[in-house]
Image (cartoon, rainbow, N blue to C red; front, side):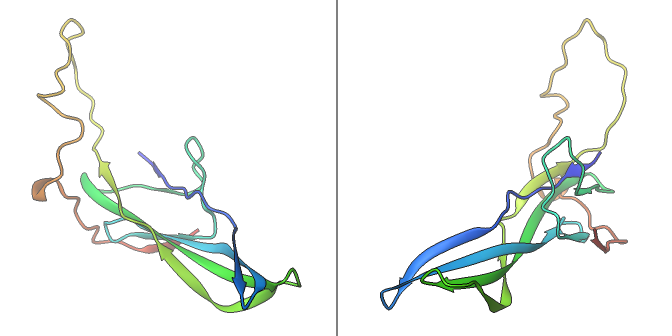
Amino acid sequence: MDLVLFAESGEQELQTDLLDTPVTIRATPTEYRWELGDGNVIVTDDPGQPYPSKDVTATYDYEGWYDVTLTTTFEGQFSVDGDEWQDIDGTVEVESAPQEVYSKSLESRLVNPNKPHDESEDPFIPERSADTEGRHDPGATTTAI
């Protein structure tokens, strides 16, 4: 099953005064680096879109808990007192807090339609513990899309 990845991202502006002169700083996202927690990495200039879009997706080979981290790279410009925009040398990277995801193997099974399913007997998502951590993917790669 695909894990749909997306960031709510866009250009950001900050207004401030420097020596009583208004200065505007503009930060524009240019790259998104998704570290999937299993060793795989996706690098893209596309922030993705919520489901049902599948612009940026990932899959896991193993069942378990993973921490997904997004690092967004920004380029900057500044304007002094409303004058023309000027580029700022270099970039800035901002890392998100890890987001927990659980990769579950999908299994078919026969059920008795006359007996309600008891989630306490077979929880869909187990508690996070050392036994339920996802495995590292030995074939992990960095994929650019």
